[in-house]
Length: 144
Image (cartoon, rainbow, N blue to C red; front, top):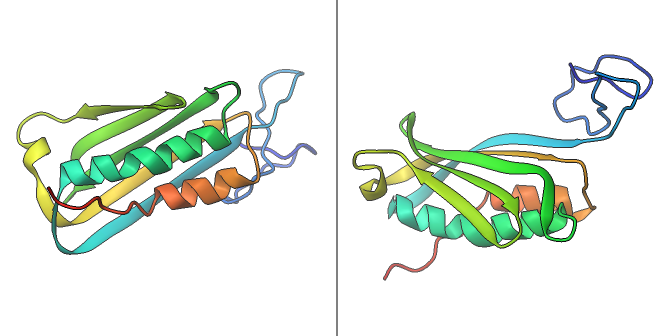
């Protein structure tokens, strides 16, 4: 349960003052969890969505890393119509790992996708929140 440094339980999901309870040694953690509906004027291939996420996720990783390593993780999913298409994970700068769902997930095209982004890090900068918000607004690369 998230608690403030003064021991009060916090129910505000947007509060950034949480400390984790569990031992005498408390430490601060940045936690960000958002879901955003992505909509496009014309159907887009899901592989373009994945490609569009790489640069903003790398910028986010840079903002909350120490020596290229994230002391925590960045994870998320992309769904279409409630069906998982792929998940992604970032634990170090410069590397976004994608895990694709089976079947025809890679061939999905739609004008609507749901992006969920979760960040947990014990190190942040002023740029972390802005970088996380930017990652929720990927810009599609041109079609080939």
